[in-house]
Image (cartoon, rainbow over all chains, first blue to last red; front, side, top):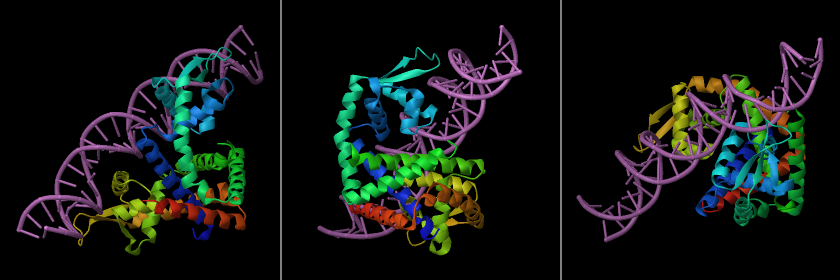
Length: 147
Length: 147
DNA sequence: TGATATTGGTTGCATTTGCAACTATCATAT
DNA sequence: ATATGATAGTTGCAAATGCAACCAATATCA
């Protein structure tokens, strides 16, 4: 709890504070929350702008049931569409609609500005690279560990 | 959105995955969630094992109203107690009870093990120090910015 | 083939959250 | 003193979450 874990505590605090600020910036720009962007962006990158629900859940790190509701909301907002899968009739695809793509593009500059001002601006190139490497390693280990 | 922000994305993912894992370890050890620990630990360190509600809220990075409910639950669980402030009659102290202190001590080894296995173990001394410095800088900047 | 276990996804319910509104006290300044 | 504004904390209500239960559909394997 002395030095050995204080970095973790700091990590948690930085996360809360930064995410909190970003959410409030998005909100005051009349834009939806961060996780909407995550989904839109994941779909934007995906081949055919479509992903199976469980792939999407994994990418945005959300529980299945949570993703179900989130996609419900996105579908209500006409940003995405569910499409039953033909090869596996249990499954469904979540596919990005043009309006969803447009919203993503509208959110991005605002979000990017936040990321820059709150995060990147305070890192040198070297530090960014080092941090990236460390986080990658941590994530890989966590996911290797009986996911 | 290429390399320049991918570290931030990684940061978010690492946070979700690690916190998710830690919560599930705590749960399967029949222990309460992380934020309970945060509060108990903040009070443990505080002079007289007591803090004003708003100080506590700031330390654990929670909105006021959220902290109110969280303290409600902790009080129900007999872990803390509210005590009206004499010098400022609007305010209240949250004070740690022995049972709360005991629970904190019981949670700590479990939590510490998680932190070590998921986080610290994958960092060299140097990297930990560097990360610590970077996070500190980011947090300071975020808090300076019209808190 | 038929029994059993897995996987994909949704749903019900209880808990938690976020926000705005509200009460009460304190601070400041005429 | 009195109005004005800020601060401390709580509460009501709508929305989001976590979890376990649930319904398929698919895999596995005797």
